[in-house]
Image 1 (tube, helix red, strand yellow):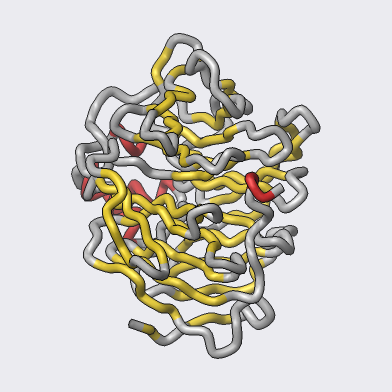
Image 2 (cartoon, helix red, strand yellow):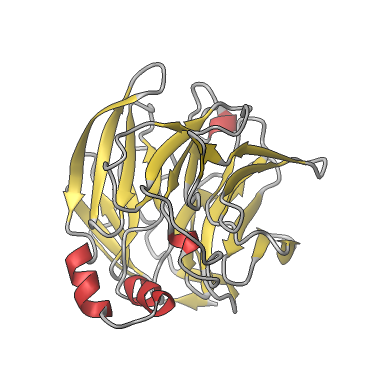
Length: 325
């Protein structure tokens, strides 16, 4: 099924005549898409449905794993294996091709992580970077209701893990709820968005992978925390989460090969230049939660749109996939 495309300012980025093609529907909240070039397959999560799905051009949609610990972000590591942010268990886990699993991160300085959310791999060394908001502790709809940690951070672990200890990369108060993240094409910059603060930050990445010089790239994308509080006064945590997403908020984010940042936001997907200037917007039929590129030529943009999944042909592809370097 194809739907009319509503895109402004995206000439040169979206293929002429392209339409949103619905390739899946009937989910509760889709998230965490990642493309496996080895398998020519798209993986994504239906978080409340507690199911990981796999799509291929030939085979269509199939259940890959259920339950899946209400996993959120997914990434393919440098060895081509799937790594997931499992929200129920508050762990970052590698799911190996042979059926085995390996816990890469679950604590920091003696405290459990909140609920790892989004995740990227640094191609230079295979290190795994992830955000750790506490959304997966709010309720049983997207995780498991439980006590929340004292702060929400940005972490990394080595390519092959260790003892499960995650390294905090920024100050404890750097973010309210860090969410989507992505590297620039040359990996000299790391972009991280903060949903309640409605802004995207950018950090310089040193050769050893550490971060410095954090600054706001773009503000005012979605509702800030004070507006959220006003709009959700008296609501339950589950209802509050729905309002935040229904209004459109910063969530999943990817960088294209030209250095432009594609992020979910009010109305669909916002495209920003490397300097944070708005290039254009792609309006989606439902709230967009995340996106990724894939397909044989890496020129198909897959967009997670709440209960549906769409594909769109673009004229750009992603920053290089880690296991393609």
